[in-house]
Length: 65
Image 1 (cartoon, rainbow, N blue to C red):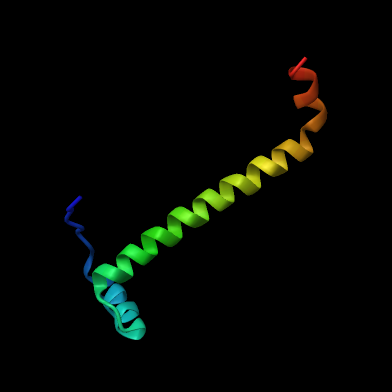
Image 2 (cartoon, rainbow, N blue to C red):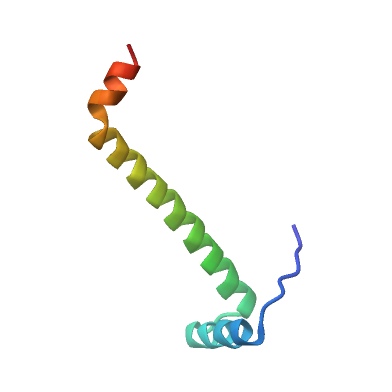
């Protein structure tokens, strides 16, 4: 799916700097950032679900009956 992304001047400069440092295009740098965000978010969700299961194990057990 094609999409346009509007960045502030500072965001554009920062993205260009990262892309240049990595030797990739700005588009590829943006795609990598999105992939990292999505991956981190899913990982964070899994961690929080595991914590809730552990901390509230007794309550969850009672609710399941």
